[in-house]
Length: 325
Ligand SMILES: [Zn+2]
Image (cartoon, rainbow, N blue to C red; front, side, top):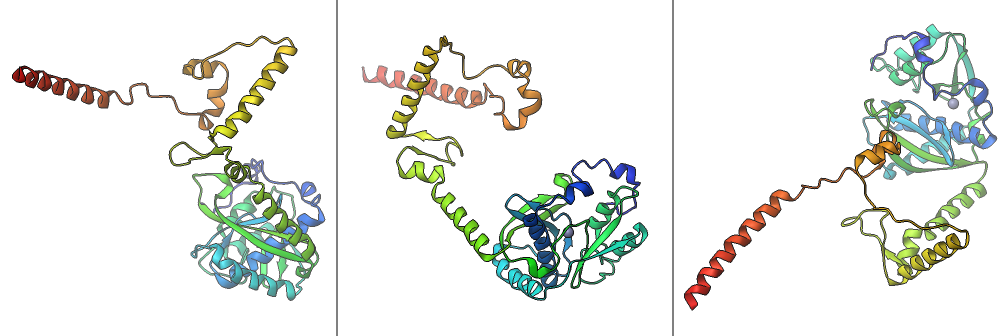
């Protein structure tokens, strides 16, 4: 990735970037969660100082932070990271806002200080440099500091790390920088945070309850359908007798309702030529989520081989049949 200073006008093209106004609309819970992402980064850096951080926003049920690190973080590492996070929360460091000039910020990113606990000579904060280039000219550039961790961030946060009442690391996933599959692949660590322990416990309980109500689990337990990912595919149920009764009853109800409303039914084939999906407008936009075109002659070579073998065997059979006579 280029670490050259791009002109802010090219950087402004990033549509995902939140405006300062949008950022300050963050709810209290979102502030807690985003602040927790800073605390998680602090903890990860204590364990693996070479970690390079990219984006760390709050999301629907918590937060994540994308990072590049020589160590591949797995759920087995969570306990260790959480222990460091607890230390940072217990230290109750303030989230201190520091406004800097663009030149200062570029210098701190080049020294590896941004998104780090110390300067890291020789390893510039590449993602922070890129993010800096996306800040439009004229918009203030700010850091937030908690303890030793200094991050390029517009805020807002909670006042002190101790305001994060309860948190938990949830999962790890792979993510591309800016969602671009040509870009570097990062590790995304998901976590959640709440104002207090009760909030966290209720959330974790809800996840457990939702798992119990998972239709894939219930459907199998009730003998409605089977899902065979190896031979058929995920999301493609094989309806068993009990489930088939339900499907047919629903179909009956649909037909009766349509009939009562004056609809007349027609039937169309399940498949059609590519031209139809172009006309309907599906193919130009949804090709990736559609089934690929069927190769009608996929098995032609196999079939020809089998037919030739059958013909050969029939000849032999006729020969022996003659001999027996
Ligand atoms: Zn922040």
